Image 1 (cartoon, rainbow, N blue to C red):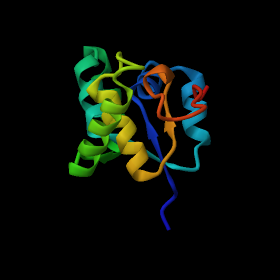
Image 2 (image 1 turned 45 degrees about the horizontal axis):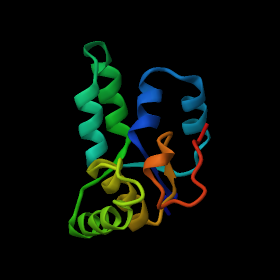
Image 3 (image 1 turned 30 degrees about the horizontal axis):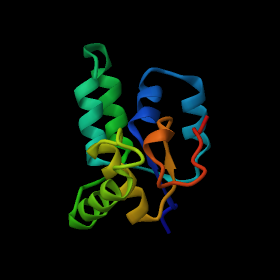
Image 4 (image 1 turned 90 degrees about the horizontal axis):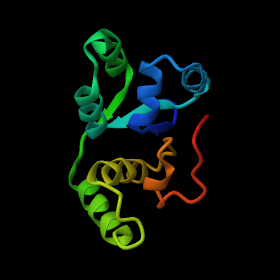
Length: 126
């Protein structure tokens, strides 16, 4: 039986790539399968520095990637409508990441907690 999932936001993966000990300890202690939305892959590749290419590719190879399907897209749209008045700074990428975690019924790990009001009590993972 596969371990349960955890969805990681770009902020946690960037910390891993930049070598932050706290992020490595957090990931090493997980008993869950590291899962990300495909939009997170886009963000990582977009922000990748030239000297980070090999580390980035290694990281990309160990993540379970979830495509944006119709269910996730519809869920993200609903979240956007629900929170557009109270949290106008939430972008489409964060809505898709949130919808991915909610559709998978998986916890979300992020440092950008203000963009994820749909997760009550969400705290940075480290």
